[in-house]
Image (cartoon, rainbow, N blue to C red; front, side, top):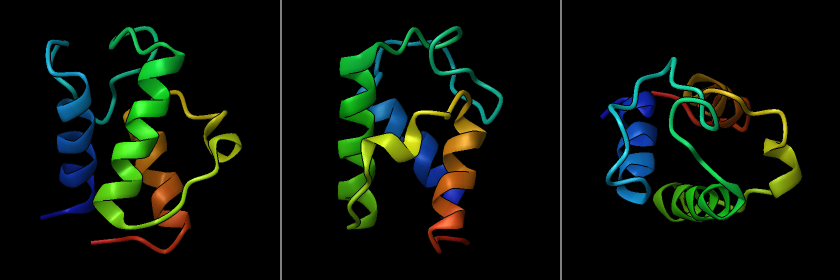
Amino acid sequence: MKLEDRIIKTIQSVLDKRPEITLKSRLVEDLQVDSLDKLMILSALEDEFSIAIAEEDFTEVVTVRDTVEKLEAQGFGD
C-alpha cells in the first residue's frame, strides 16, 4: 500500500464520520480536526509506522499532503 493510502486510511480511522479524505483535504477547514483529533491522528500515525512523532514537527501541517510530505522527509516512502 502506498504511503499516501496508509496515511489517509489512518486518518479515516480516527475521523470515521467526516467527509471524504483526499490529499488536498485541509485538516481544520475541511475535516474539522480540533486539537484532540490532531493528537489522536499523530498517535495513530505513530502506531501505523512504529515511529515517534514530535507534536511540534506537525504544527505547520495544513493538508493531508503536508502530512505525507512530513513523513517522507523522515524517511518513509512507497
